[in-house]
Length: 464
Image (cartoon, one colour):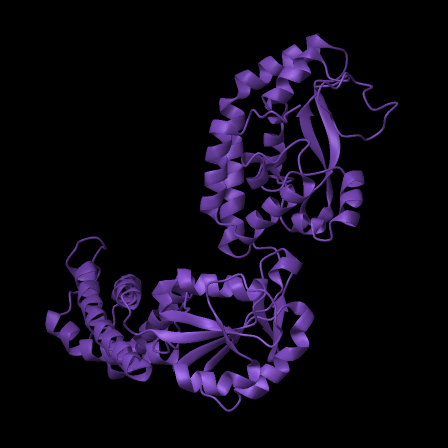
């Protein structure tokens, strides 16, 4: 059934792509020569020349999609991979068509029309793919084109894998049970169906299409034996490495001269993500400085005349990759607050705090000068809150993954803060939320955190 359904999917998408490529080819002619959107410098070619060249556009487009792997379907294919694949396919198709028309000299070699064909075909094919996959996923949720799976292991990683498979029903992969060699209490609604030596028989009995090897890191030596047992089967085998909990950051697979590499400590901001996050930081911080300038001036005057000492307090903090920077705050303590105590945590009712400082800290207004740190690039609007180097060294000794926080820029606000983990609260819990943010970062998560900060992130019982 799986092989047959795969053939149906290929036929459906080939037919859909052919129709969309033909439509894009004709639409590109209209955009170039009939829409009046682009100035005409030469004579308009007859529509029949466009129609005559259309079969080349369709056939060469399908060939380009085949070369770029657009008809090799994976149940776990993500949207980003689909977008990249479609762009690569349409770019290659446009190159093929341009070269062929130039060689044939059929009188239809408009560069603007070819650029329009690339843009329009990429959009139309992508929307066609997403529409087609939405139908396929609806059928899979209803039980059609379902492939059954076994999960090797019963530990934390294995149970999480089973839960993820049950939750992502659109993939059409249904876990039916665990395979485990070590006895022990089970915490799942799936049964243990046998031992690893039983895998070939279980695969044949339950018509298994996928096996997920999800053993903990402490049993990684058993993976080779599991693969040897599975060598005599036709099931698709995937290894679920037990590394996110150890690394605490985004895990990526790359290639070094044919050697697969798994990156366990890598900055999740790459490509356009870096540009988007930096642009958002610069625009919003500049906007904040301008809009809040009357409030900033008022607070500065109040701090200046409220107690002796400078208006701004500069303190060394650890930022991206552990590099130090001077973080700005409105001074909320006496100028000589740490002269006798040294670096210590602020506590509730701290007698070093000025009367105005207590108000500023309770409302987090003392943090507003950090908008300048964000604007110049020392910090980001959203990220783990920065700590002083002395505390960073101290915490890293008791929390092995603490330094992973420095894979991204420190932030004025963060996922831990908007969820209440600030001030004198659990450091371990704060680290957990910071690592969650790093692993699951998206621009939309940043916007959500900023929204939460505006409405209930300034004041907190632990803000002192």
